[in-house]
Image (cartoon, rainbow, N blue to C red; front, side):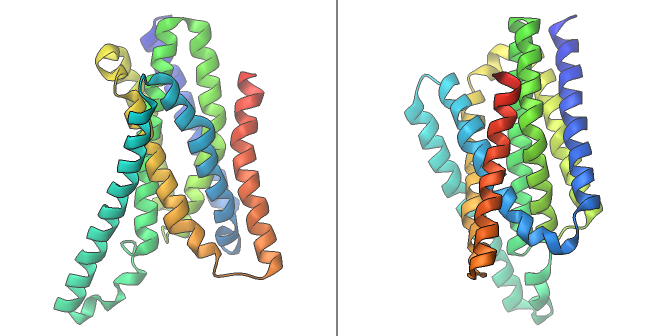
Length: 259
């Protein structure tokens, strides 16, 4: 089997399984659970960043300092983009009072969180496709192991991502549509990598770093502050437990498949 065909099969499997997982989450999670399960999403996002994405980025780069600088630049970039959206809405509000409801739209603070999750997840999935392709080009066995590892960590991560999209105010159909869009990026990245692997390979660590930056920013700047609205012991214990569960699910998905 050629590396291109193997990559297409693996990329399609990764996308379909993550979409299936997202669909199950969307149609089984009760609305009252979503704010609580955002804690799990925080853990899954941070687990994916610090246990999967950044180790890959540092391992593939000859300059860890450049990868770290890209993460820092990415966080500042997402901060500036969020500021631009805020300035835009303030300007519209000043021009026309009819837009006073904008804080409740999908372009409000939660809507921006959802948009950044989609961007970060798409970049991450695109790079996953490149990694799968590179592994299959090396040899088929390495490609299979790599694809299984990526699929394993994608499932809990996609579950966390779709919960964030629901929490941002998206409808179930819209959240699934965005999840499907980001899932296709794995296949696109894999095919492009097979066709132009040498030219794309050097950019992989920095694409991973940008994906990590977007996920860190969403988790720390947009999601964690919302948890502090509830300070009672029971709510705090659930939040901490679910964050730990989110991190653990990423860790064990990697360990069970790879090790």
